[in-house]
Amino acid sequence: MARIEAAIATLEDGRPARQKGNELPVIRVGVVASFARLWLVPCLNRLEGEPPDLRIEPDVDTRHMTLSDARIAIRLGRGDWPGTRSEPLFDETLVAVAHPAVAEALGNDPSPERLMEQPLLHDASVESWRTWLSGIGVDYVRRPQDRILQGHDLALAAAASGLGIALLRDPYGLAFSNRLGLVAIHDHRARNPNRFHIVTRPGQRHPAIQRLVDRLHELAGDITGGYSLADP
Image 1 (cartoon, rainbow, N blue to C red):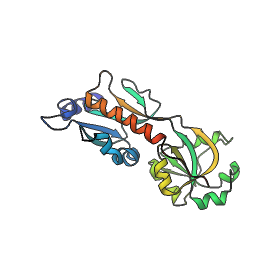
Image 2 (spheres, one colour):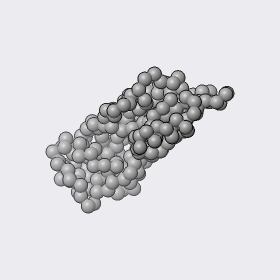
Image 3 (cartoon, helix red, strand yellow):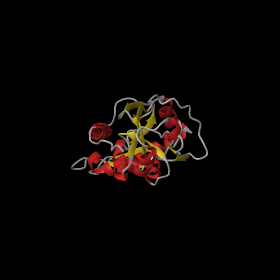
Image 4 (tube, rainbow, N blue to C red):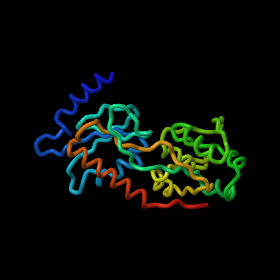
């Protein structure tokens, strides 16, 4: 399968960064849907340059895509994917957040028992909540009232609808959380063991790829220092 995907990628890409004549080099970026919605698409103008010197085509997919001189990926994990070159974008802090009415009902810094009376909203898997809850002495096992939603923005949106408590991944979903009016419901913070990485193939990068990588790092730095979270 890997060899077939590589052959298809070669046919699709044509020349490095798919640049023809005076056309802008085109780079396909493999991302999960939430990253496309929260980060990539809203920032396309900045990432493509002012004036534009490249064109980005989001490729929403969860598989480990084939990499080339015209393809990169942004993936969540520990950055240890074999046969790739990966660079972390930012560290993430896990913060329990909820609708203000839910936060008011819970009170300030609720006990583990009080907190666990609420449904927990998961971002694709239970790993983040298991990490966060271990810090307050809870050995978490998924319950029928808890929900798994396929996307960080979906988990935050569910919390804003009063469906339970979500874990904000700061700074990844911070701006979206603030727009939804979510507030922190507990003083405890935990480090997410996973991070987003820019993943490219090994070796020297095409200049257009390197420009995009540099801009992604600049964007991550700006957003990391640009917001704060509301308290209940």
